[in-house]
Length: 160
Image 1 (cartoon, rainbow, N blue to C red):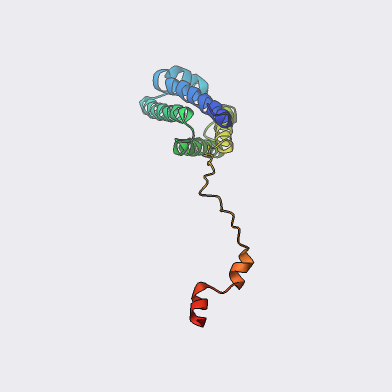
Image 2 (cartoon, rainbow, N blue to C red):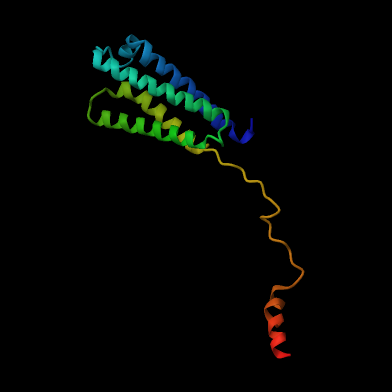
């Protein structure tokens, strides 16, 4: 593990665990889901939507695990996770603005989505470039001013 990517890997591991646990709740345990959001009765349509969201959470947790394994190589996945968490935060803001759910039910997940997106942005993987000898400018023994003031070879041939 590279030491410069440890905070990012920790964030990705937490995101992997949280997404996987919520995917389990949305897919396999709708009674817990109903209790989490205030004893809401889930009809067939809401169960279908919950299962769809649960399967999306599984895909996001797989992406978080792949990015955990190699953050620099999978920087595009990290960017996708940033966008996904930020869009889920915006969705919660819209739901709160429409007064569709209570603030107490939405505040924990809003905070989670915003903190995870912020941490992923803060620790976004940057490939550390190795300085090659080709990138270095070679030192010259000739003074650059002398090169400008001395007549060129073509000018000397014209004079002769």
